[in-house]
Length: 313
Image (cartoon, rainbow, N blue to C red; front, side, top):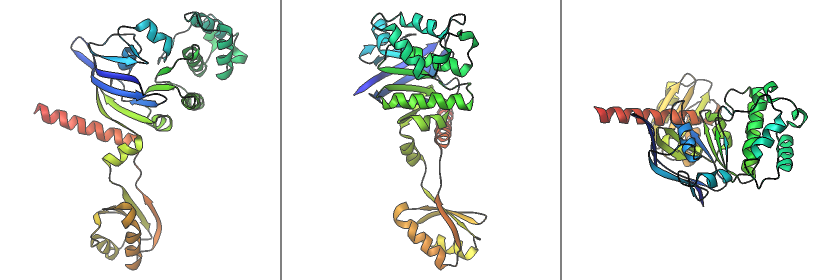
């Protein structure tokens, strides 16, 4: 069941198109990574989905509510973490959360505030002014604020931006816990390693949708699986023997290792190893080429750029 749906969602600011024709579905309980560089339109998309700004064209439905027509109802069922959350620095962490909880009359303020101060590791600092908090502590407090009313859907905009490694890890682990609880999470980030760790699927975006799928499926779609054979030395006789195999599609030698593309990876890999050994090659290790989500993203961006340039010419 789709909890977030967009239909040709677009937003322009004057002559500048920030988001163009975005059509997307996010299932209940899914963590979707919305990935792209700075300026790609990620924050603009989240602001539209959270009912903060209206689209120029198209529309979106979140948890059954039109984001441009049913904003008050929408805000009852979503939580939002912005890249730069604002607090009242002269008030304590507790008083800040109590204030924001007051926007939801059905919330048991004391119970929820205590719950999330404890969950976010802020209980011992609950009476301290937020102005004395580190950026990581403020980010955890912002997550607590977004969760006070137990929202069905969470929009997280760069949740670990600017945090040190320890604080980033704490925030990522908490998001992982929220995922296990079955929350639907729309995670905007340019941190591709973070997305790979947290997300069921990723949507690669630069003003327009480039691709959406699981990281593994995207890798398989864009790259051929390759066998990497590390040897004592890659002699010409061994390379020639490999090239003669009818199931070998490409061979590349890098020093003492061979990178080989096969017609049928699983079936032919043992035959490749046997051929190398028979030809006198002394194998140290056999592995597979690994492609990161960054490789996937850069490839898609390059293809999109080349396609745009070809159209203009």
